Image (cartoon, helix red, strand yellow):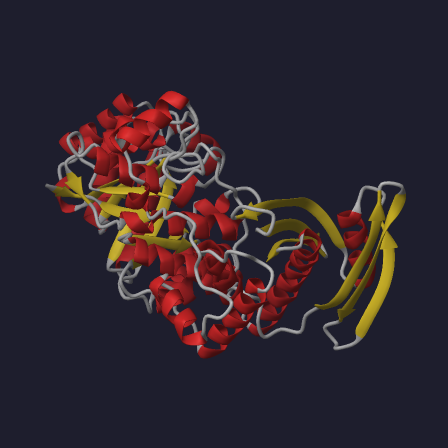
Length: 515
């Protein structure tokens, strides 16, 4: 059977989703989970794009040892040099060079002739081959490129040192028949294609990304690329969890192997959703809330008699477990530690104590503390903004009613350690009153662009998770927080966003500028 390598680009292509802005600690936690999920290659980012991305890629390269860590670069020497600096400590560093090959891209974006594009591709691959043991070269917009030109340029970059050739459906235009034909044509006409792996990378603009990727595998692809939950620019990328389960369930049609651990799907999906703030649609295949729900009486009757009547996938296959009582208010620290280790978390003694304290506080107010609650506590602690002077919440109070103007009072500790306090109002409700008050307290210029919330778990005592997007002194940042109290979660998310800005500014001041 053919083995297919899994190339995850959640941290690069996925992070290009509008509104997504992951910090270094969040990227590292996602990378660790992707390692547990079993991906073969992890594209950690675009090191030359910013100092922050460079540091995140370097941190992941130093930390992840069981997965090949990749970075993307344009066909530019400085991009390649910066990528090497970020990736050189990786166990298996990999460079991903992207260069457009379609007529429309070459003419309007690159402003180069086909011959100039070939020369540039060969020169940059040759240059990168002096540093990197693995080089993936991508013919951007391959599905709209001239096939004979593709054959020519692919042959030359393979001779120059490329080890993987990616022919993507960059704009999500292809059908499965067309995309399969593209791979078959390359496989049959590139004289030295046997020296490399062929990779598929599909976007979902027409909803065909998974189908197109499966067609590519049927026609010679030995590597596939995608993101968790299918996140990415426009309509997103190929959803890795959908691809993995489709291949498992329909192995009669797709007889190939991969290293993905399907029981890690739900946990990986939840982590990415939480950190990106991109909620999963209830009817999303594999990981949506309704994926294993049945309301029709006929369906329910069939499920009760034999689950296979309407379920082709079991919840357990993808790591979905029923909510159950996790631990009680009398549970000890040792039992709590054993449980979080079973959940796959590795924490320091200080983080363990902080998590245990949060757990104990939650048991005082919540009847059932589930695995999902513990997951939320731990991920919040592991990705907290640390080692920076910041604003801290001391107290808040809100007066509101159907006939009253909502009024809020907030007390904070400033980054300088001073107590600051004021009151404010909001004509549209309590949350607005709180936000107006905090804007008056905080010296940075703040403009809120988006705010949303969702329930974690069920019942009147469920946690609420809030996500906020804002600009602080003109810089876009995101914040999030969880609490059983909606107003408290809103205040904390606001401060989390501001403190992330302060953290980023501190890091920029400490780091040497590469550019």
